[in-house]
Length: 430
Image (cartoon, rainbow, N blue to C red; front, side, top):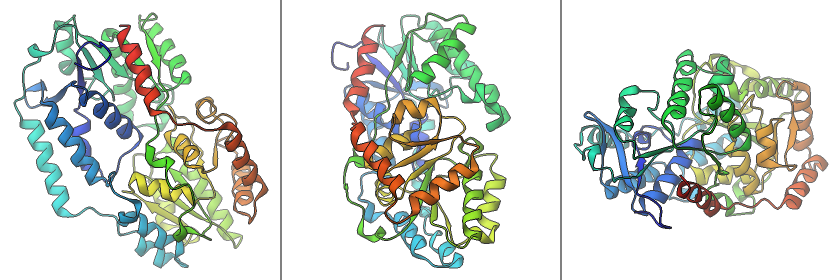
C-alpha cells in the first residue's frame, strides 16, 4: 500500500529495466525512474513483461534495478567523475577539428558493464514472477511511459480485471500530429497506444496544458470525451539546483548547448547551418550537441562528421550524465531549443532551474514551461537564430543580461514534491 490512503498501486517497470542498454537517460527515462522510485519506495508492486507475458515482481528487485541502472548512468556521482564530461571540456578547449574529434571518442561504456546489463535484462525477461491474479482488488495500474500499450496481448489482462483502474502518462501526441518527423511505424503505433488508453484507462496524466488540450481532442474523437486528465508539471532533478557558479574549467569558453535525441523534430539542422555560416565568417562559438543519435538523421550526422567548416566548432556528446549536463549548462552562453514540437521540453526547465539562459522555438508548451524568461524565435527563422547566437556570444552581452534579468524576475521554482502530490491527489479521485 502507498501512503495517503491510496489504493494499492501496480507500477509498470518494463521499459525501465531495459534502459541499462543506453549510455545515459533521456527526459522520459528521468520521469519514469522518479515515478517508479516514488511509488515503489511506498510499497507499490512492480509489473514487468517476461517470457510468460506481464507478471508481478518483487519490489526490492525493482528498486535494486533502478539503483544499478542509475549507477551505470553515473547519476549518483559527481560531474567531476564523469569521463564524458571531461572529454567535452577537452573538445571545447581544442583549437582544431582533429583534436576535438579525438576528445569526443572517450564516451564508450566498458564491455564488462555492457555484459552485466545484458545479463540483467535477460534475468528480467526470464524471471517467473507472480501471476496477475495476485494484483490486489481495486488496484491502480500505472504505466508511466505508454510502453507496450499498443500491444493487444499486453493489455488483455485489463479486460479480465475490470476492478483495476489503469492510469497512463501521456507525454505528447506528436507522432499523431506531426508524423513526418517520426519513423513510419511510430505513426502507426502511437495512435494505437493512445486509442487503447482511451478504451481502458480510468485516468490520464499529462505534463502540460498544451498536451491536455490535444489529448482531450483525441479522446473525444475516440469516444472518451469524459476521461479524467491530470496536469502535473514535470520535476527537474535536484542536481540542477546545485553549484550555481560557472565551473572554473569552463571559464572563458564561449559555447552553446543543444540537448535532445538527434531526430528531425529537434531541428538540429537549423543550428548546424547557422554554425557553418558563422564559421565561414571567421568567428564562431562552439556548439555542444548533447544526445544520442535517433532516427531519420542522416543529413544531420553527415554535416557533423563531414562538413569541414564545423569540425572545430561542433562537439557531439552522447552518454553525458545528468550531473555532467548540469555542469555543462552552468557555463554555457545559452541552451538552444529550436524544436518543431515538444510534449514538455524538459531541458528548458532544467536550464532555467540551473540558471542558464534559454533561446527556444516559439511553442505554446515552451511558453507554458518557461514563461517570459526565454528568448523565443520561430523554428524556421534562421537569420533570427543566427543574430541571437551572435548577440549572446558577445562579451558583456546585453541581450543575455536581459534574459538573466527576466529569469531572476520570474523566480523559477522547482518543486518535485508538488509533482507527486498532484498525481496522488488525482489517483485518490478515481
